[in-house]
Image 1 (cartoon, one colour):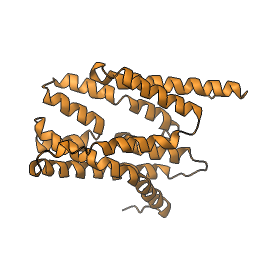
Image 2: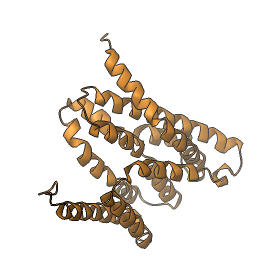
Image 3: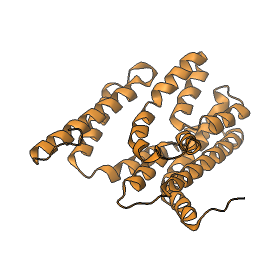
Image 4: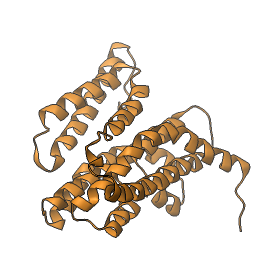
Amino acid sequence: MATISPSRRRSFYEGMRDTLPLIIGAIPFGIIFGTLSGGAGLSAAGALGMSLFVFAGSAQFVALGMLANGAAWPLIALTTLVVNFRHLLYTATLLPYLQRLPRRWQAALAFGLTDETFAVAVQRWQAPGTRPDDHWYQLGSMLFMYVNWNLCTIVGLVAGRLLAGIADWGLDFAMLAAFIGMLIPYLKDRPNYAAMLAAGASAIVFQSLPHKLGLLAASLIGVGAGLLAERWASTANGTPSPEA
């Protein structure tokens, strides 16, 4: 059996360590998914299977709501695809760093690319210096999130059968707080503020669009606003923009 070098183990545990604050915010989210699954008509095995093989919190909640309303599976699949379109932006950002890895690594890291793991991994990849074991850092974050999400699903399945009304306790606010925590470190310059404000305003304006298309529209508008702000800032400073 091949041994793991100390530097790889260190990167792996650092990925887990840096993900811990976001894990805390995700715990109530996973528990609530487990508690709501029974009311949506999903069996315990189905709920756990979704967490094991889909592993996408927002998409799982969307699918759960559509199952409760009797939606057909092709529509559920299409809607969850739209909800997860933001992962295309994540992939585009990480591609320069991950394209050198073997396909088995790329497949594993792509499967586990959650919002939380992206938030910590992208800062690690973009940090100055050369660290050949950064993919172990992302793996540590990914596995920590994966184990936590599935354990919380199990806790939610049990709690949903023991505690009446747990879904109404307001625990889902913790996930909102976690997303705010992921956003704050990026608010360092005008392009990032422009992207945040444009995406937030667009999400409010387009929230009534069906099948979560408002989320996709807000993402694209936010990215466009950030790119325009970066181009204007580069022009004002007399330096070429990265796209030039």
